[in-house]
Amino acid sequence: MTKTPQETRVVVGMSGGVDSSVTAHLLKEQGYDVIGVFMKNWDDTDEFGHCTADDDFNDVRRVCETIGIPYYTVNFEKQYYDRVFQYFLDEYTRGRTPNPDVMCNREIKFKEFLDAAIDLGADYIATGHYARVDFHEGEYRLLRGVDTNKDQTYFLNQLNQFQLSKTMFPIGEIPKPRVREIAEAAGLATARKKDSTGICFIGEKNFREFLGHYLPNQPGEMRTLDGVVKGQHIGLMYYTLGQRQGLGIGGSGGSGEAWFVVGKDLDNNVLLVEQGQDHPALYSTSLVATDVRWVSQRPKSGTFRCVAKFRYRQPDQGVTVHVQDGGACEVVFDANQKAVTPGQAVVFYDGDVCLGGGTIDQVRALVPLNV
Ligand SMILES: Nc1ncnc2c1ncn2[C@@H]1O[C@H](COP(=O)(O)OP(=O)(O)OP(=O)(O)O)[C@@H](O)[C@H]1O
Image 1: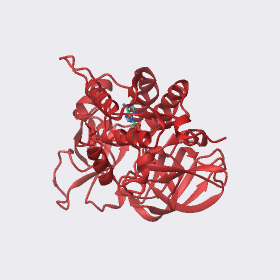
Image 2: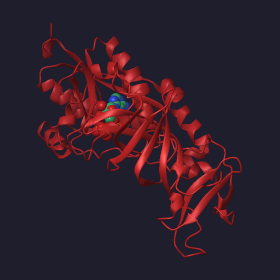
Image 3: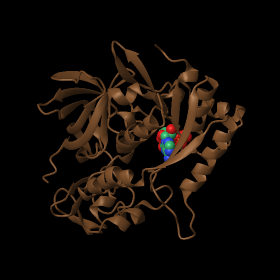
Image 4: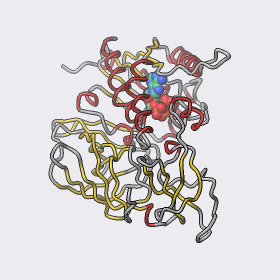
């Protein structure tokens, strides 16, 4: 028997931002039994004893009091460190560029948090993600948010049927400007709060300084593909494919054009650089993805066509996917792609439906890098 909203308990993940505030407000308006829960995943207490999590929790408290719902906090610092932060460091150590948001969703928000919510008697959890879930032909589907500009399915690509069956994304149905209007009209303290940007545990901090705190610096040479030494790098982990800024070699030499990172030779600790924003070494023709998960309980097999994204907010790209024995996928691009980066997520779509995704493990460059 279906429960009425009044009988349905929804635990909302509240970050202290406007999206999750409006999520809780809308569910409460619809008559659900709503509880707000703030997760503390990282301790960034500074030398003055100040921690941004305290400020965010304070906003959660103010919003929950306005809406009239109970609120709690849960601490997942250890789980976050072990399953998200350690992965983040490991990937950088391997010269890759990880995506901690994808891992946080898979391991923390939709696992630890979901389990904690179920312990609180939740029928569902809800978050302020711009995405939608529907039930179609016997299974749950993950759909892009209606505000395609804000769509966050890229980060949710690893979610499975169980996780989706327990999840509501109310603001996935609403354009972002409307979300702010709703927050204003409801008098929510977070109505004008700035959207958070960047990686949550780094925040506004200097990225190089932060990473240097955890991983040893190993400076080395910057070389062209022909082996010409162009300068020194400060440690491979600080650079990402396609990067132009921060190389410190300006337009020196050759054509006078800017220099770009085109590869990393980990064995020899060499950063490979080439000149010109359309240098062929920046482009690739295909990739191999590992850790691939399909949202559907009927996993894809064989060869099929769909569209994909190799980074957040990238326009859809036509691809042919070959699913290999063991689950890894070879993804062949219709058009050559620039700066496809190992460690990032590749996410597959059929129209508005997010099919799933994986981690970019290898990239086949248009010209051989010989590493
Ligand atoms: N510390 C947290 N505690 C509980 N839930 C969280 C927390 N951080 C994020 N979430 C949940 O995950 C959703 C997406 O997180 P993200 O970091 O992308 O925030 P956002 O899109 O800026 O949303 P918001 O405006 O709510 O902060 C949030 O809307 C919220 O539901």
